[in-house]
Length: 285
Image (cartoon, rainbow, N blue to C red; front, top):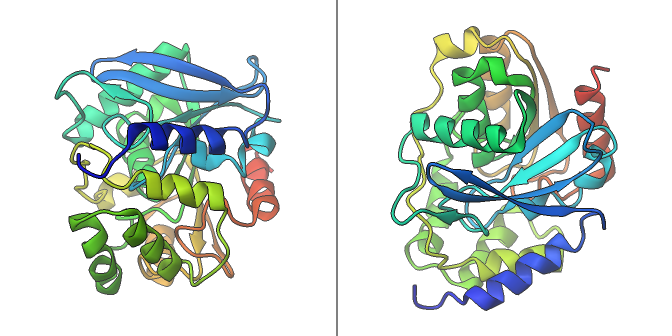
């Protein structure tokens, strides 16, 4: 696609990945939809934790601020969503087109990693994928955490979609930066992470699976322990509505609203606060 430079993207990707612990590994997992890139770290004998990034220019490396703490108690596997920005390689024009396809893809990823089950975490669109997977593959799930997940419990704000539209229609580094600076309210963002988001503008991504929202009856039947952390300053959706609906529908959910946080600043903002919450939840405390 015009304007996209693969070499610039890969350099920016590697620069953020360099913020991970030194003992990280880059793995390739074969799936029916192509080769999936998984960045891993943590003790091999520890329970597995699968991490899914948000949409747009987010990739597996976006977990850099949390991964060191998570890797103290888990074998962390952070995934580049196939068909989205990252180093996963779809098999021709094969890519997930439905929620059932995403389930098949994640089943294959876990199989390739040798994991019968795993804890699962997702941010934004990655939270949407994670929640759908938990509903469709409960036997492969242990604990689930969701960081300001989109289209799970509430819809997008109209103002958010209007602001995003120019970036979506004609992506450019300048438009990506302007959108992120607007949503995060001018909070300083890691320059290397921001450069990666800019480098992803125009990435030849497949159309993402974006519907449906999880059904209320399915949410009521969810038996997993769930941690839902919502950004108080999120311009993506109404944080209060997200918490209210999740509390009403999900039987075993713990919720918290993170003050001073915006949607796109997670999961790299306030690393100490967020890491304490996530590790305590995964440890069952």
